[in-house]
Amino acid sequence: MQHSDIIIIGGGLGGLIAAHHLAKNGREVLLIEKKTYPFHRVCGEYISNEVKDFLLKENLFPQEIGPSVITKFQLSSIKGNVANMPLDLGGFGISRYSFDLFLYQKATAVGVKFLLQTQVEEVGFEPKENRFFLKLNKGNSMTANHVIGAFGKRSKVDKAMDRPFMHQRSPFIGVKYHVKTDFDPNTVALHNFEGGYCGINQVENGVSNLCYLGSKKQLRQYGSIPEMEKEVLYKNPHLRQIFLNSEFLFDKPEVINEINFSPKQPVEDHILMVGDAAGLITPLCGNGMAIAIHTGKLAAEAILQNQDRRQIESQYRRQWTLIFKTRLWIGRKVQWLFGSKTVSEFSVGLIKSSPFVAKEIMKRTHGERF
Ligand SMILES: Cc1cc2nc3c(=O)[nH]c(=O)nc-3n(C[C@H](O)[C@H](O)[C@H](O)COP(=O)(O)OP(=O)(O)OC[C@H]3O[C@@H](n4cnc5c(N)ncnc54)[C@H](O)[C@@H]3O)c2cc1C
Image 1 (cartoon, protein in one colour):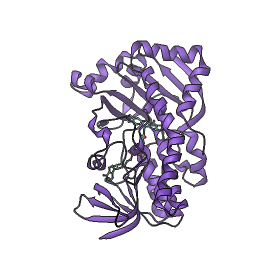
Image 2 (cartoon, rainbow, N blue to C red):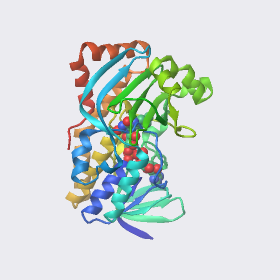
Image 3 (tube, rainbow, N blue to C red):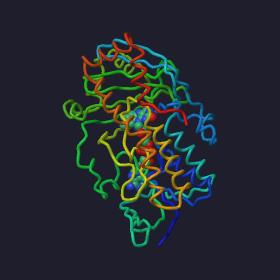
Image 4 (cartoon, rainbow, N blue to C red):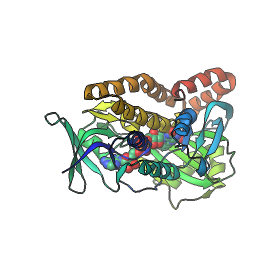
């Protein structure tokens, strides 16, 4: 049976950053990813600048791909009233198709081994042997000294571990397009519609990402995504304008179900959970990717800086709780300011009349540069 020092399950941003950091510091790392790079994911593709210093320092900032520079925020209510504000921290726009591939290549270059198109079906800790045992979909098994869980918001592994959030159904769907449209490259906009909100911002090559969190109930009611968009999203005049005047670059949208924002644990069955596997922040905050990158770094550091398993786990749990727990909680609360006529008017009014309060709310869902 193959044995590895460290196995990382899942190669999104959290897994790739952890893998890169560990391998660069001399550790043997195997990353198991069920897909093959490059591929599209449902994501707004706006990355908060809180990660920029770290990426630059690690030579992982994807400058050559040409990310957009985002400095302004626009919010519209369902009726189409608009508020604008500058972003203190700002961010950049880049497609996951390009960014994940870029990080995969960087991780390969520092010696990370990849097992692609392979799914982990089960993972468990064996106390007697003081190691992990993993079962893969190809019928084989592996062991490892350490496991980082970077398998995103919902995975077969969550089911096998019977994590509590797997018993809850989510009312949301996520839909993403890439479009060519006339949109300010320096702005990220969030447009409300009944039951959800839709973000738009530029990524690389003059392409814009158009991505929304919608309601599963409305999809059932209207029978198809195009019908639901016509009946629900088009009620916001800004969305109607974007949908009717853009060139859609995918044959069909990327769609996901079961987007659950319930709290999770950062360490479970001795596995260090990073990114969405430890908790998904509501997308309107625009920093789930920054959290995945930051937690990937922290999990790697916990393994690098400690010998003893208890110390590794307690350092990671402590740091995760300190830095992210409240941000995720505020994100869940702020989501109530979106997706209905009255509250979306209230949110637009808040930015116009009390920009200071709006900035404070935004600040609390974001972290410091690291
Ligand atoms: C609608 C929507 C819009 C969003 N917009 C933004 C935004 O604009 N900005 C932002 O910062 N965040 C945004 N987010 C959040 C962001 O996408 C996530 O927080 C981020 O992708 C988390 O990264 P991750 O590495 O934890 O997981 P992921 O990127 O999801 O990666 C997990 C990986 O694990 C693999 N995997 C899963 N199970 C297994 C298994 N059993 N075996 C092997 N591999 C497995 C998957 O194939 C996947 O590649 C948005 C989320 C949604 C739902």
